[in-house]
Image (cartoon, rainbow, N blue to C red; front, side, top):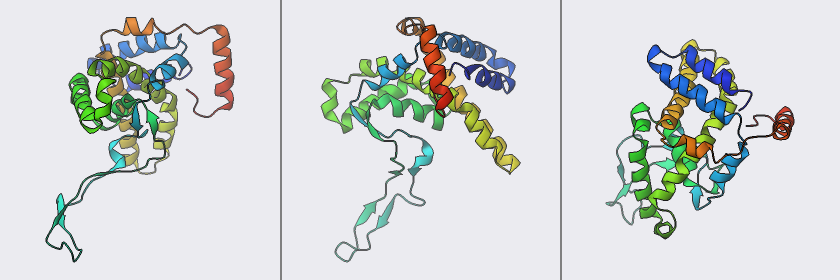
Length: 236
């Protein structure tokens, strides 16, 4: 993140309009502050709250939806007249585990929605909490809406550092696409994902309080991090 954020922000600026100036200024400011911090702390804060099953790659392309109607007639002889409900199926569970539900919530919003949705992330968080407790009542005593509201900005920072760390690789993958239209579509998608993340981050009101909770990185921390990045692909 420390060595990549400037390139990510400059790329976004290059493809932004004048109306995005304040958002790009926010991006530069928040990244400058994060680059001086011990970012391992962000990861630890997010992943210490392991309370439910997390998919780990929760975006719209991993959902399979019925291609026609939502019901179909059963073909079994015992109940040939019964209609069977056809529901969407979530696939690709390779990165699932027991974790913080905000990991899936934040990633889905930035990767699979639009600017209108992310601008109303507080409302969607309230609905997410309602559905979380409805489907897993045992969490009612330990995971309140206030709890999720506290976890949300930390998961958002964590997701942003991941997006920045992967940004150059994602663009390289897109540039390898031979078809110009598909290539530009992929590049625009990655920019839109980063932009949505920034829009959600800008809506958080207490960044000063949150960032002040993260220790500054020392010269030794930065040296160790650089050594790790030198030998580890896609290190954040």
